[in-house]
Image 1 (tube, rainbow, N blue to C red):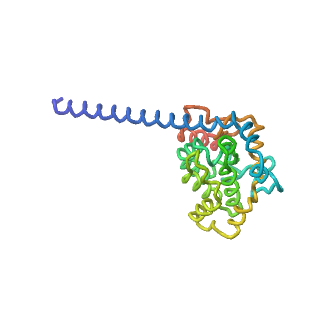
Image 2 (cartoon, rainbow, N blue to C red):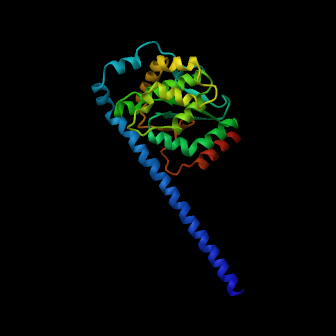
Image 3 (spheres, one colour):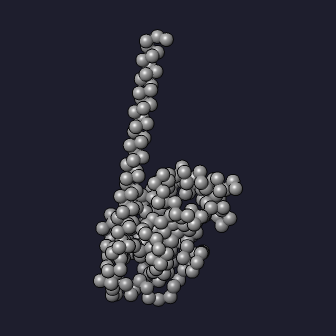
Length: 258
């Protein structure tokens, strides 16, 4: 073998090794981000009782008063789950999430393409449960108002599109921007066909506020430790640090094949 060929092969191996190290570093950064963000959302459970008590009053009463109005098509126990995907899918992913939670946004960013692909292929049904953990932790009403707006979008048949729009435009955790009806309606304008008089009224009236409060109560009584809580066919899978979108896809496709 010529010296030139040996040098070429050695250089190729070196480039491959460098690329592998880059991929490992990127994966470590991604996992660190997920773990770090998850800690922020878990902290809410420790403080929620004291903070909610301290902030009891008009805002709290407006969140829980009135009849419980579930959004159109809500399913599951007490009608607290917003379904995405086909009912006959062999796998069900249950997601408890808060639109103000940064860890939820990290999960959505990393897993959204895979979830869309599997749901559209009829292999996965997703049940979204909306909670208000960050409102309880930091005060404000953005978690609840965004959840109500998402339920209003479900009434209009635009839940997934608006759900994704909220996470794409999620403010910093300490910025209660989603407490503004005007902001929520502005984002609805970015979803084709959603910004209608009916949607606006639903948002402004807080039509589903009591439903959101009931969902949040179910989260607290369920013994969950933070958001996002992600269950595949009843098993908590997001706690597994080895979980990746590719691994989730493999699990769902294996179940689909029986």
